[in-house]
Length: 419
Ligand code: CTP
Image 1 (cartoon, rainbow, N blue to C red):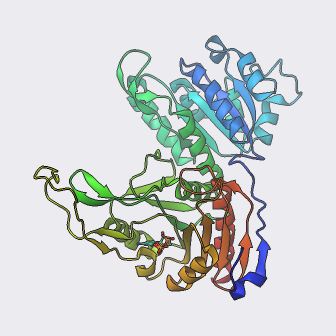
Image 2: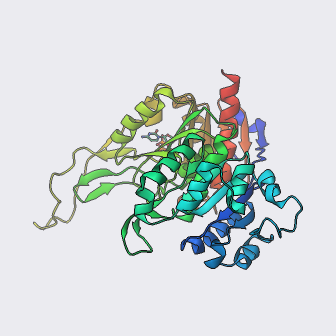
Image 3: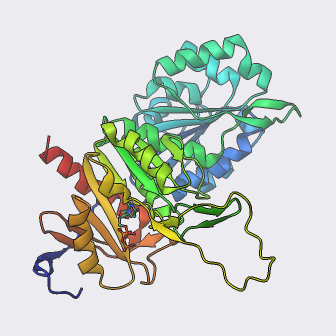
C-alpha cells in the first residue's frame, strides 16, 4: 500500500472466520425415494459435498431399484441406511434425524409427499423427516398428472404450512414422455434452496433486508450497439448469495449478466444506469444495507440512434457524444449501511478514500483489477476495506463468496451498533 493519507498508519489484516464453503460444517441427511430421477440424486450428493457438507444418505427400498446404496456410500463416505431393522447403529432410525442440520428429500415421490403430510413412516426417509427438528427441503419428481392431482396439491399445501421448503418441481419433458410440471429441480437449485432454508433458521441476517447491485450497464448507441464494460456480476452475486445464506431478504439489481437466477434472491434485471437507479430507489427505501457492487457506465451516448447506424456513405470515422450518467449510490438518499466498491488500476488508496467521502459511504471495498486473481470474471478477489471511521483492513486473496461474508460481517456490526 502506498500513499500518504492518514489511513496508512491504521492498516490491519482483515479478520474473517467465515467458512470457506457455503455448507462447511453442515451435516445434511439426503433422503432418496423411488423415482426414475433417483440417479440425479447422485449429482446432488456430489454437489452437497463440493459445497462443504458432510452427507448421510438414506434410501427407501424402492429407491434401491433405481440406484444402488453403494453409489451414495462412495459419494458420502458413510454407510447408507435403507432398512431400519438392519441398520448398524442401535438407534439408527432416529440418530440420522437428530444429528442432521437439514434433511433434503430428492427426489420425493407423490407417495413420499403423502406420507410426509400424514406423518406416516413406512420407510427410513419418512421416518427421518418425522424424527427431525431440522429444516426439511423436498424436491418432488413425478408425472405432471400426479403433481397436479388435488391429493398432491393438498399434501403440498399442508407441508408448506408446516414450514417444509419445496424446491421445484421444474417444467419440461417428463420420463413418461409428457410435458409439464414434475421434473426434479436442478441439483444446483436444490442446494440453493437448502442454503436459504438453513439461513432462515437462525441466520444472523434473519429479518434484515439487503440490496445488492451487480454487473455492468449497457447504454444504447443504436438498437444493436451499446457502451458498456467488462463486469460479469460475479462479485455482486456472491454477496447476494452470502446474504441469502445468512437469512437476509435479498434483492439483487443486476445489469445484463449471464448468471443464472438463484432461489431465495429476488432479482430485478435492468439495462441502463437510469433503470438501475430507478430500481434501486425503490429497493433501498426499506433496506438495512445497500452493497453497490455494480459497475454502472459513467457515460452514455447523448442520444441513441433510432435505427442501426450504417457505415455506407464513405465515413471513415464516427463521433458519438457521451454525456455523464448520474452517480447512482451518490444519488440514493439512504438505504441503511452503504457499501461501495472501487475497482482501480492505480492509486487505489487515494481514489478509494475520495470515493468513500464523495459517495457518503460507510465503507468502500477497493481492489486492484490488474492484480492476479482479482477483477472481472475471476472467482477470487483480493480487497482492502476502507471504513468511514478511518479503519483500513487488507484481506488476503479469497473467493468472492468469502469476500461477500467479510463485507456482511462488517455490515452487520454497523447495523447492530446503529440501531
Ligand atoms: N457507482 C455508481 N454510479 C455510477 C458509477 C459508479 O453508483 N454511475 C458506484 C459503483 O457501483 C461503486 C462506486 O460507485 O460502488 C465506485 O465506482 P467506480 O467505477 O470505482 O468509481 P466512479 O465513481 O465511477 O469513478 P471513476 O470511474 O472515475 O473511477
